[in-house]
Length: 142
Image (cartoon, rainbow, N blue to C red):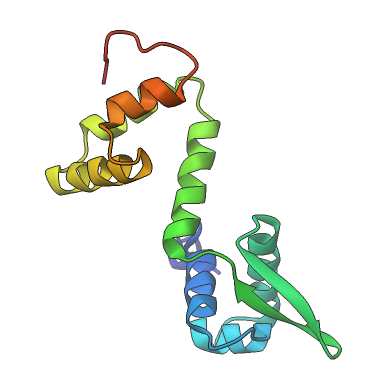
């Protein structure tokens, strides 16, 4: 396969997870392949499923001589896992989060504030962080 025709990293896994999320019940890899792209090799889909299993976002169970697969998270859950991995790989986690929040479009920032308020039991996110964090805040920096 030439470089121009290659998928973006993670695209196949996301497509596989989306297909599994829509499956009515645990399904075999061949069902996933047909739902994603029947032209894909069975082994390509089986490899993607195994990688997703290693990331603990899908689960497999024995069905006769083969396996059936089911999603444990949805596409948003997979994206959140990826975001955590990016943060875990950075030496300046607080700096990355600060830059991320500073560059959010207004609608996304509003959504993030709402989710933080939900997570903090209705308290303002800054007071939630102060209660949840064992280290005092450094003057309310954003």
